[in-house]
Image 1 (cartoon, rainbow, N blue to C red):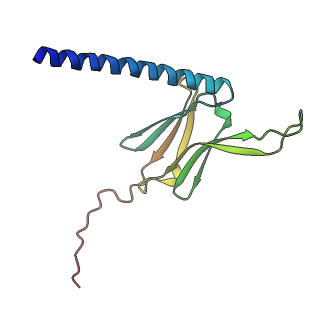
Image 2: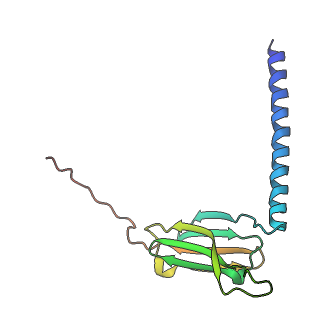
Image 3: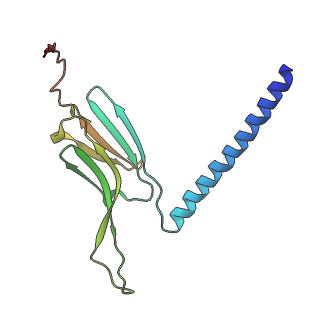
Length: 149
């Protein structure tokens, strides 16, 4: 009985793996076809915390480093690139542009906004944004009394 149960589980597992392989292949092919016919690959983000602050690595397939732009608005960081909006008249260049946001993130309160920096690593084709800690709350400890009413 145990052998039959294990055999059924094994067959089910193999069938699921085959389905997953097919799905993964279809997704990769769809991404390639989308990119070839005017679409864009999705950016990849990796966020790490270090002793001196946070580091966000962003890979943007198909987007040149010179096209990337970063802005900080209050407590939000936006990474984007500008795309031209095509003119309705054939052969005429449009003066209109639109932004395609790659990433929008809320900046944590322990980050020094004035010293956020970014650099593009040509070798790995990766944008690295560094968020240094502001140390305002470092080693802060306080007991809070609870009022009764």
